[in-house]
Image (cartoon, rainbow, N blue to C red; front, side, top):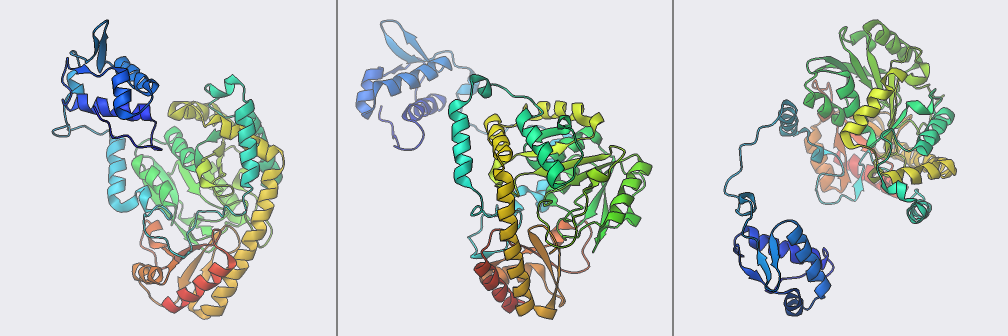
Length: 480
């Protein structure tokens, strides 16, 4: 029995196990057929006998083979029928209502593979992709040292299940940071750790809404938010966004929930002024509704006085505040948090437990130390300075090469802007021509529920150098 082993891939014992298992399931190895001894198989394939013993032990534990004392090892004669066949046809499995809705969302072209950075296209040299951060500013070595030290010195309890609400040290660190940097009023008991802001949104929808309930959303809005709403079979009511954010005169009267990005509206970049923030809270009071505040870009502001988050203005406990470290550290970390109104805390923790028990513990402990040591806030200061430089280069290049041919929105905060061409252009054609010139830009039309009045292009700048930004805008000007 010669097995085609590959060095450096999965473990050798795993390869032996998979090869024999496949032979049994496809009836190449018949029930009752003898197998080579562990010593013979090891010699034939020039591997350690221990490797074969481990593979045989796993196969025996799963019932694929049996051992007969004094006789040898054999393919089991009592395999369940499900272990035998090569699949002839797919069973007609039924989806739940949620499964059908999720499939419908994907078929309408809203699946996550359409997100920037996940499109599978060939790399573009001057890619103004948004939603990503530059890892050049991140102190990766400091992060690795903390993570390695935590892994080496972690007590055994760190490898057991953790608290659904999250590591207490991390929750305390986040609460302290939010109080200092965002004027958020919260107790540590209100902070719940989640796997990114997407999970926070999903849990909030499941906790607060039933199929058929009305939800108010900004139009345009983040398509990841829209996917959750459509899959939950909610009645989505788009509310127009202008240069000052969501237009409260158009708010639906019977909505139970409003989803907003007031600090840097996604994708237009509008900043909701104080008067509208207070008016939105007044609407929530009248409608007996909850407001979900997604503060995805709240750490980055460049002009004017910072505006208080909705949560810090809330006196009725109607705002559920969502934050994430994906934008400020690195996306693969997948740690976000919720500051929940006190009456919702226990329900949110229970929902988190039901979803996936808890977020990875060692990463939580590492992040807690990273924040408590001051490394996180030092990193934020460096990143703000770098983004300020990038933003200035971007606006200067636009002024130099595009001047009166476009209008810019969203430049006061965040890490992306929107270009609104004055001429009537095709978004798809312009994107294709820009890509041919080595420039990646992203159309805004897909973020609207209602057709937009004019085309626009979203340009992120956090992952480019100043030189790349200037050259990219120069090339884009030629395309336009």
